[in-house]
Amino acid sequence: MRQPLRRLYLLYHELRPGGSSYSYIVGTEMFERHADLYVQLRGPGADVWPEITFDDGHISNIEFAAPILQSRGLTARFFITVGWTGKKAGYMGWPELRALHAGGHAIGAHGWTHTLLTHCSEKELQMELGDARLALEDQLGASITTMSLPGGRYNRRVLSACAEAGYTQIYTSIPRAEASLDGSLVGRLNIRGDRELGWIESLFAADGNVLSSLGRQYRMKEAAKALLGDRMYAKLWAALNRQEPDGDGADSV
Image 1 (cartoon, helix red, strand yellow):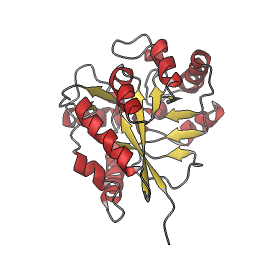
Image 2 (tube, rainbow, N blue to C red; image 1 turned 90 degrees about the vertical axis):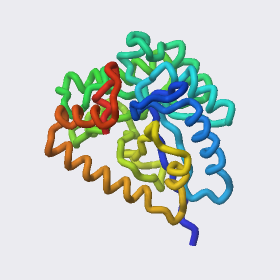
Image 3 (cartoon, helix red, strand yellow; image 1 turned 180 degrees about the vertical axis):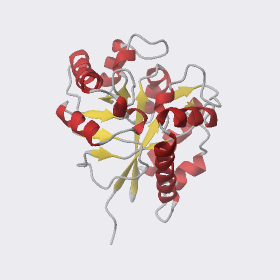
């Protein structure tokens, strides 16, 4: 009996011609190859359907990602750090976000300041969640009901605050494929810049075990975070991933 179609949400951040040693930057040529593969994987008989997401709202999302996606008939979901929009160098402004939305791409929130939500007070959660959603809705003229968790961090208090702020789907950093579109917690797999095309393809193999192996690695990372604490873990993560001086360590997963 054929298994129901599952969806694997793939997480990108910044694209750059020539790439970078920083793991959260993917070269534009590599992303083009990824996009071509996703088109193939969406063919008849697919077991796992690739879905593309971006976090933060980097300017490369509109300069490079959008044209690459459009040329292949693909769309993506862009999660925006609202307080950076039109304010932080290297990130999109409202005209760019409106152009993405008009191009058929989905827009969601990624907080206001990119602070880890588990560290926020009740007042701070209102700004990171409620104010961010309302600002996006006001600027885009569309309902915003999806939220991507900065750094993938959450607990029961954060999830309750997300629901109160009007979000119906929360995107995590748990590497898993989703069998249903109705779940409130959606897993995603971060795609690093050093991931070769063959490795990406192996994620979608019907008899592969790459995702289950990544799930075990994720649980080990969660244990390390609990042992080291967020601050120490972020420093270790930044060193291992060759984070650039102006990179945002809060995105470590």
